[in-house]
Length: 197
Image 1 (cartoon, rainbow, N blue to C red):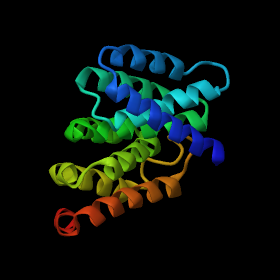
Image 2 (cartoon, rainbow, N blue to C red):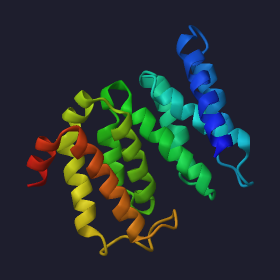
Image 3 (cartoon, helix red, strand yellow):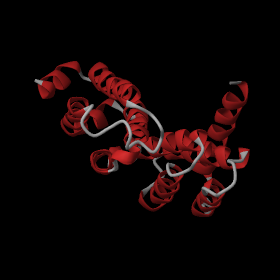
Image 4 (cartoon, rainbow, N blue to C red):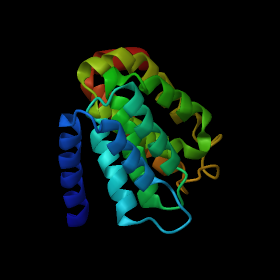
């Protein structure tokens, strides 16, 4: 736990330095994305730290092109054999979705519906996007988020469970759905209940 906390603190420092960099932003992101690449070997501390840095930078409104670098690296990490890498990749994906006014949230929601083998991880990314987004961003996307999450809850038992690459079952997906709905409801209860009804 202490190592993870230190990595997170260092990653926020890297993100702050990245934000003040004038000419090296893209190069830094490309290096981090390269370090985060999923390989055949066991995940290294370098790989996990690179994903932690990408998650921290993702919250800094990296812009269209730089955000795409983070998106691609995070999405690729969801295919890892390592649960730690997949988890950190989901955080990075959610972080970049929360920036730029939540412009990537609709794409994430589309993926949640289409990529059932990664549904749990994509729901974790959505949870991160919701918790890292401001109230205005959530208000913009609430009518998109709630129906997707409610639809998953209604379908549980039909198409989940064994199809999950992450090895999680129905209960984990149910918990992720509840977390997403809870976060959206806390931020805007009246509008969330209006969409649910």
